[in-house]
Image (tube, rainbow, N blue to C red; front, side):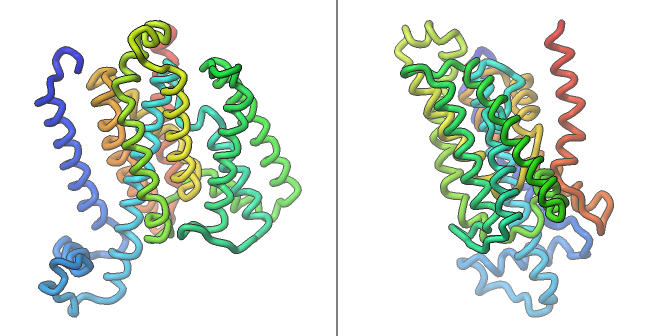
Amino acid sequence: MRKGIDRTKYSLIIITLILILIFTIAVFSIIGTADISVIDTFRIVGSKIPIIRRYIDISDIGKSHETIIWSIRLPRVLLGVLVGASLSMAGAAFQGIFKNPMADPYVIGISSGAALGASIAIILKINISFMNLSTISVFAFIGALAAVFTVYNIAKIKSKVPVTTLLLAGIAIGQFLTAIMSFLMVIYSKDMAKIIYWTMGSLAGKGWGPLKGITIPVVISMIGISLFSRDLNIMLTGEESAQSLGVDVEKTKIYILILGSFMVSMVVSISGIIGFVGLIIPHIVRIVLGPDNRILLPASALVGAIFMIFADTMARTIISPIEIPVGIITALFGGPFFLYLLRKSKK
């Protein structure tokens, strides 16, 4: 750990963030158009937990309230946790391997590939499902991974993947896929509104199904990325220096790219494209806690989860009963911060 942050402080910071996250989940599960009390909310949730449900009677609570809390609000909040944590951790890891604070999880074409895949699914109107994921989610996931695979193979030179080449390939492929998507929207104009709405990002109406499908793979990916925190720290000194200190730089980059891309592809396939989270959250955490990836990665995940819950709650309540895409809220926060980064980089 860097000077000023010992193991005790590290543990205290993480525990504090976990407690804040739990508090945020509890509070924001209550907020909504329907007026449901705090006590009733906890009773409904408790009645679904096998160990304690026999002791909780919710017969006096309306079925509609039970449905709102258990089937709508809670899975939506938990999906927000997963999406925010994934985007933020991947953003922190990608900023580390690219050595660029303006890198985000979409920098290697994930968002463009997912958007094109989703557009194709919307246009074709195919009805399939896999791992509790809808047709649109399946196509978006395939599109995202296909884009990453293409970018990686274009950028690969023998057994190495230069980060500059990877970035340029990601930009080129991203623009190309976006052009194809735009062409499809022109040809199939009747589906344009649905495609545009998907690309703005939303956590509405997902339920428990997608959570069951992606939670375990995403958590495993997060743990996998965290295992490379020490190697990422050493790589901050430079790739040649890290190589001399025993770090397999290329192997580390490949593993982080694979795990991060897989994780982001999973969540984006469900939520749509939610911008700026993977850019601003890691940068804020880095400013506050420093560049040590042993604390930066988990702290970014936790702060990202908290931020996403907050942003999504604003999206569904700010002009209630009308709901706006959460990507608009994150952009309203992220846009000004991105301009701040640009201004700071000029100094």
